[in-house]
Image (cartoon, rainbow, N blue to C red; front, side, top):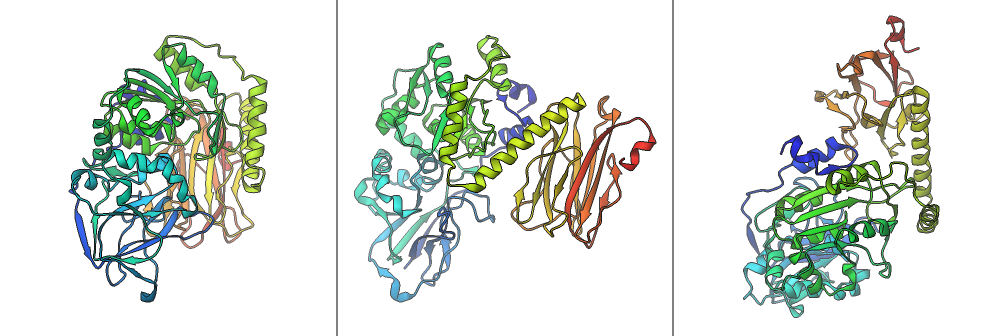
Length: 544
């Protein structure tokens, strides 16, 4: 997949990051196995952290309580993913219920439609392949407090897949069965899929008459209770309505009617997220345009795009200047520069580049955001830090009369810190909180910045560039050195990039510049400072 192929498909910030996930090959030709666990024990899901509830212990075990299977959407041997069960827990034999049934392990259930489609059906290929099988299928419910909500749509979808409600068992107590049949996962939705992945969706499509509506815009109904609110979605609804699209809120229809619409459509536009996952029921070659509500990446959707064979396009319309969650909260949408370029190239229309969002929409966004996060001090503080970072970047850009160098640092105990601009210090040189990862880029296209980090046990990493993450998070692994340089373009050759690091010993290193390596072997780093200076002579090399 070359750059020309992507040029009219990616209208997003961080194009290099998006290119990487969009060009990745997700298909795996690994053969799927079906294991039969005699006297198998199935443990209900128990959250590791009660505040989360979506990373649990439990799953299928053998008769000796050795873990056999649960669910993981990450590539093995990684664990600790959201919506995962990747280890068992101790249980007394006296606690076990006993059943003479031979059952099939169906995996997990979550009361979120998007994750139901992408995470909860990875073993359903076996059910579709064996429609004459009458054994019960056992599922583990994450967050059982929402059990009653499943009946509104889960059983409808299961019925379309050939699994009747009387065969569905949502396990509530640790139980030992005569045998447990465990089909392999056909997808690890953040990593790979096999040829069996689409079987449940193709079976549903075969049982539903396609709609005659060929161009649809999927939107969110204002009457449906949701954790997410999109401010200004009406702007996009009206834009596509004028271009012949039928605007539909799928939540107002039955599951069968929703599948019918998607199956029959040749062109679909929707917001990236749960609505986008309806593309699993599309026909090969259907054109899907995904409007991004946040600037996060979409590896799940990229996997689906490849599996189904969609003709796809991503367009960023994210204008949230306050904190925006991927899965909930309030997002502000509008005619970003990426949207305007998309409209020019795909709809042959030039929008007014000076257009501003109407004040009532901005006020509505702020009011809804404050209401949603009223009880979450951490989110409010993060949002103010994010807003301050954006203002700092703009101020520095005006001052320098050019794009500015920005860097994000991941620190132990604190995670990703607010974005800093050239000249700033990032980290805590009065605390022993090590630096674990860093991303460096210009806030607008200017020149390429390249960098690598150092580990005493493995040496220097390969060079990364323009916002790619150097270092690792979640593994408590610090880096001990860094090298930064600009490329040799006409712009890059006119500037020196200077940097220094602060160690746990309480000392700043000397300044280094233009790719010179700076590293320690026996002391972790807790802060970094980066500068960019015009190259006017050797006197600049000391960092003053």
